[in-house]
Length: 362
Ligand code: URA
Image 1 (cartoon, rainbow, N blue to C red):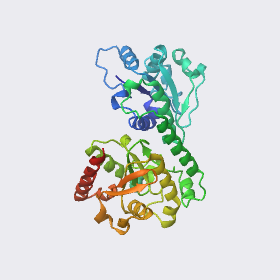
Image 2: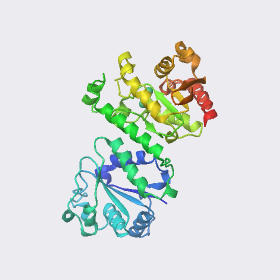
Image 3: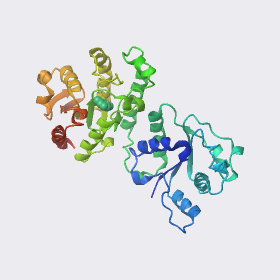
Image 4: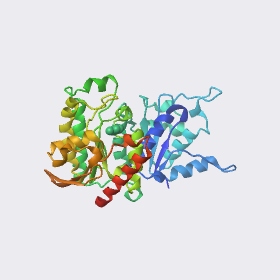
């Protein structure tokens, strides 16, 4: 049964709906998110079919973009005024069935006034709206928090434990991010703002025992504010799947927390971001740290002044290096960066084998 229903108008907010779906599916099982009424068989009463689809949800997200109110069909008639408009039928059904309906504003849309709406969906205008603004990823995380409070615990596919410790870690990560947003002393501060990028503090489960540290966010990551969402992220996900893990079982960050452009990190950038990364480590307190690539590896081994600190990644990948941090004993398991294996099947095999080593800790 679908627990979260995403109602949207293709013409108005299809892209936002897709992004929202992707984010939600990192927190909830796919079968708990319902986005499209795809196949209603010939002869079936579609109003009833939509009612049934809506009946199965606990939270109904009504996406409202800039063209939502005024969208017209090919004859120039406003879609919302048509009795058989799916968007309207679904919203009317959710309101009638007293579902938890949240209007979700995207693309800087404003909430419509009740008198601009057909009578059966006019009460939507009184529902407090949630805005997904320019900080899309961060806003969706807040929305996830709201949805989590509504979807019954038993229905959650991938919920994180709701302990006080979890909340403390999440708050500390948020504070770190806020600090970074205003860190004018960062060598990448202006580059980030000029390009409307976001800092990328990290993502995943703050209670994870496995922490991955990449090199630096790429442009995909900086546009979204999340690490490893581009092609390297696909490799990372594939490797995790290979050992039975999902992204939400681990925590992923980078050595630089801002995108530096298409080049290697500079020493002054590493020097600036390293204390932030150390704080991330201290917040997550992982049992295993996996530096992905030579930059993260060298930084970690050097900072801890380990005997392996001058070693090359070609010698150290897949090795278990036991050491201590302030909070206890840890293992460092260096690995090649996922980008290295993008075009090489043999490197991919090596990475896969190295990931197998992590099974010792799962
Ligand atoms: N490469 C990285 O090192 N980090 C990312 O987040 C993405 C690509």
